[in-house]
Image (cartoon, rainbow over all chains, first blue to last red; front, top):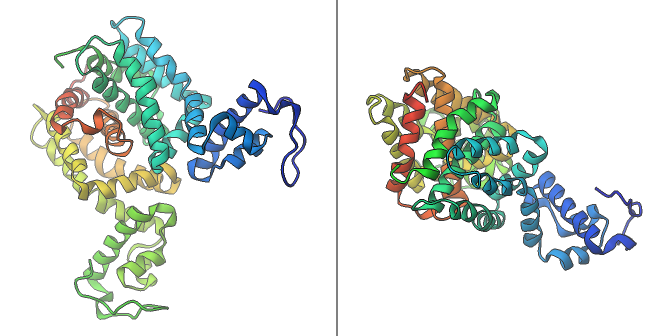
Length: 207
Length: 207
């Protein structure tokens, strides 16, 4: 996370290194923010802590991102990057879009690297209104509206959101609550059951 | 909550009133526990705090329920009491069971009195493994297995859990994240879309 090895930690204000500016520092701050929010939760994460983890001054975090909420929004965007591939799934036509969407979603959650930050965002949003607000506006703006725009169906945003709700519910029961038998079911078994549901929500106007 | 008005609060160990034993005290402890867990969350609730709210000695809480986890389990059972009506929905036959189940579920969540404790349980379970464990065993034992037992279909528990996951996801997106348009959709619109999904999960073996 800090490949260019900044000065070792010491008490007080960290030394300002040559790498304190530019795209490297920005990326380092963002990755530190994602890790801090994921490990400590929204409440216990501070701009100061993010700065420390990234090896930069707090002022630089404010300079690049603004308030804690704005850093959180940026960290969410980073965590949701794999999910942003989902709208691309829709470009393959609607014939088996339910199955492709279910498989893309389960794939993102089955991978521990992409799952951990998503879980952290979800936990924060469920317990802190500020985090919920960020997720709400981000999810709406970036995901649902994109998905809906590619659907030729009335109530497209509502339907996309119902499909997303189903996926969120499965993620919670399978990966957070870990309730059996869903927790240990093979991914393909879940895809097979869920695909027709998503297919109906996203493509059948009369349903 | 304390109809028989115990002695007014004062510092130190509360006085042991005549109402400290018997079903009244037990009910009072349970309702105090539900309120404390709902308002403070799992982490910040203590047996001592529950005892104080119920106007009894901590020892009596331990006597009736055992550890904090066991009080939490009992509070969950109380919070889920409305949900325990759900298996009864299945007794009306399978013809339109999806619609009846969707309507029963939305009804429980639309009512603020039954929603608040369910939300509290969900939030606790998503952030504390001890709470998740209690919910996991309770939900499996009391709800899913009862629903599954009344279904004449292979993989009945898996299917009941998929249906429950969908409902949990809708509850989170609609009532916790409050993401539009789902947050403001009329309940009947949600029931109409979700009913065929539940119907398929719970009754169609080939699906």
